Length: 256
Image (cartoon, rainbow, N blue to C red; front, side):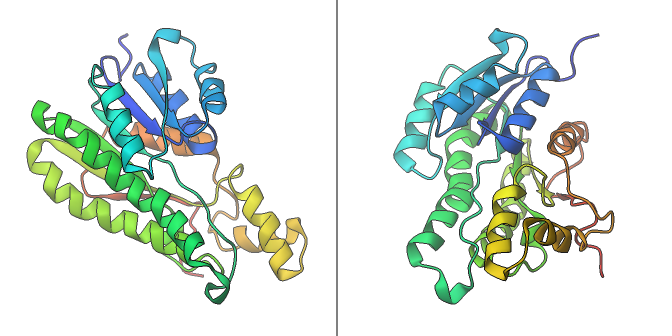
């Protein structure tokens, strides 16, 4: 059987680790040619090593928060027919009350989490428009939809990604390009740093910080990275999906 994504080229940001790595490997497994973008070449090459067919993968070092870097990335990929953009790059930012957050910390979070999405869409949507087809999937977060104390810049940035996605869907949809977002809940690998910081901020243990967090989910567990990757593949199988946000949070937004 022909792989479901055969003939498609995907560009995944933040592909050097975590969700980006899982998504990129899953897309390659589905038959897509995958371009791995991120700031650290070594980790991108580690991801590339997980793809069975070397011809299916390419490494491209870039900082998505930098207009110059994104412009250079677009030029370096001029020969690629990218029709699937996964804006996954993001940072968690500080774990502090807002009164203790420095403007530079706030700007860094928005620079990667929001401006990065804007710059990548601005750079790679025009080619999709010319072809009349394509997909953009922005990785948001359940934190953009419910409170998370001591994480105001992150929460605000992910809510901005949701607003960007919904509005962009109406710009891109008439041109044949679907724009959607995926909002994971806390993922096992990603949350280690934040549980450690939360424990330090609250005077609890790492285990207590994790338990307090997962207790808010209906399924009472974290989300696995391969579940998020599978959700991306599932979204691509739904041709009528546009302007939507898919919640994958183990029930984190369910009422208590």
